[in-house]
View 1 (spheres, rainbow, N blue to C red):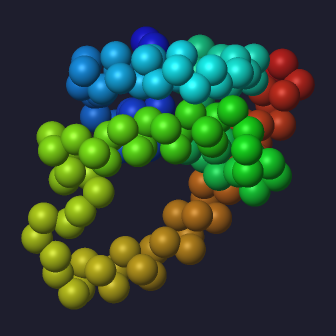
View 2 (cartoon, helix red, strand yellow):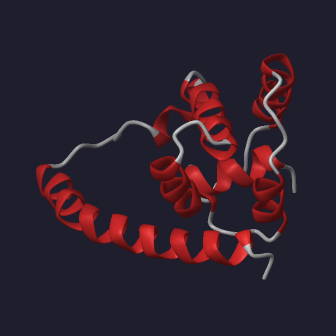
Length: 126
């Protein structure tokens, strides 16, 4: 599985990445000459939760390789009409919005905990 496909799965609700988006991502990475990051490569290869690790790494270093690659992929996906439903609620509901708001801190704390553990484990090569 390519890096773009894995990032797409982790950040955009476990859905497969469109091939056109993967090609655009690879071309954009080459054009921007984003540096290769050994830690990111290990995380992708091990199928770790990249969204959780990215949350922790972004707090420590906002310009790390994983964050830059995630922002690039999300920007490319957001511009596509076939991915619009992942960024906008199609049928908004007040109850659903309040539930999401109530659960968000718990979800963030869980992601932070998982991301910290995964980062610790992969930085040490375990």
